[in-house]
Length: 558
Image 1 (cartoon, rainbow, N blue to C red):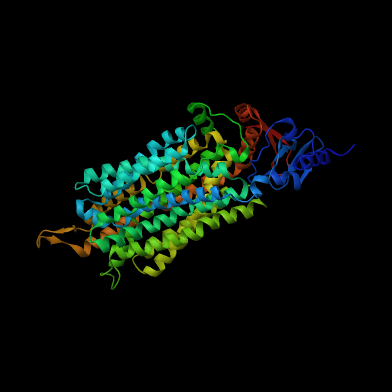
Image 2 (cartoon, helix red, strand yellow):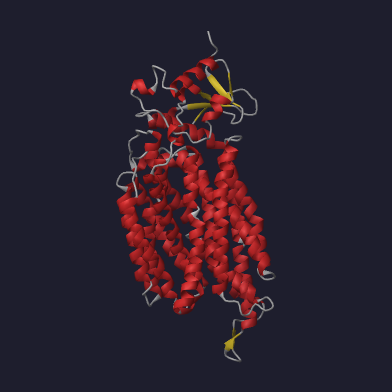
């Protein structure tokens, strides 16, 4: 009689070749195509048997009954259809102009502050108002995205976003302007919660990772273009309001592309999933009890906090530092915004796909590679951005160089975090998971970071002026005390930006802890997909034995 290991390998080989009479083809059960390269190949090709039909992977340290793992790489190896290419292209285009719109204001922030006579705290409140409405409505669109037509939800949301952005550019009061800025967040919430799940339902395995990298690479590129479009359009038109009227035109084109070119695949189609939607309460409870999802979300929240603060205050901070340098008095924020936007674009073009490629390569050796790469990116970015804040006053070339590499390491995270969500959450709950991640990451991340940095900066500025025995206004000459004001404003904003360094360290720690759970949560999701009608029971009751550094095997209930 052949050994248990050989019987397992033979059985799976027959299933792959569709020769097994008990295979899914003959039994009527759909094969499981959930083949994200995290653990599956490791079990069949690099494993040993304990004699009881259980296979142990040396690289992952997890023991699994291989009879429950069904592998099908066919959908991952087939060529992409024309419709899939068009759909991914449309999604990436919308994501690009989405982030262009978000950071157009950052490129002309000084002009807006002068127009409405507002300080740094109110300047940061513009972004906070947008993100608050964005995160509040994200759960609603997440719920709808798991149950109704994603194409029409996205088209409606993008249309609303275009309209409110255009109307906001005509507002003459700060109250009216910030109100329409908040309404923009509603439209963008409809898109951001849904788009990644469409990619997930069309692709699996490394192709899904590559498509997500392509999709998320539009974020830093779009952000950089936002700075450039805002500042350069203001220069040409001599009015900052025209900078806000570029993306609505592009948004109208996006609506037409969504309606006529984009495909909305069946949920879980790429994985042959037949799971049915459950109640919203069950979805939320499931997500809260998913360690990999929660920890990666907390790590991503730290990324959002840092990118939000840096994107909003970076150009203004660097411009104030250049004013303190010899010969820097003629430097305008428009010039800095252009350079900052260019750096953001290039770091994103390199960083986002680099993170995805490195993670894919490392998965072959270490099944916990995804969260480890994210942790590495955050921890490497921390000293670089800290040093950039120090050098802004002394050398602009060194400062921009440090920002480039700091953002490059920060950008390693974007597509990997999205990939983690998609392979540790079952298909019928992915839009809800996207919405939950948006809610948490923005509520504790970039919803408050621009306002917090501005608020701390204003407080420090007042305190430092009093401590020095000076004030921003010279009563004797009835004119601003510019020399003192420039230095105090720079240092107050510099000290407040140091907060981001501590947040990055916490983010790295969250991803390191996530690496401990990632394999088990991936296996739970694969099993739930592979057993139609038993998804929730599998997620609650399954046991996955695991090995810890060569010690005795202990069965752990997940």
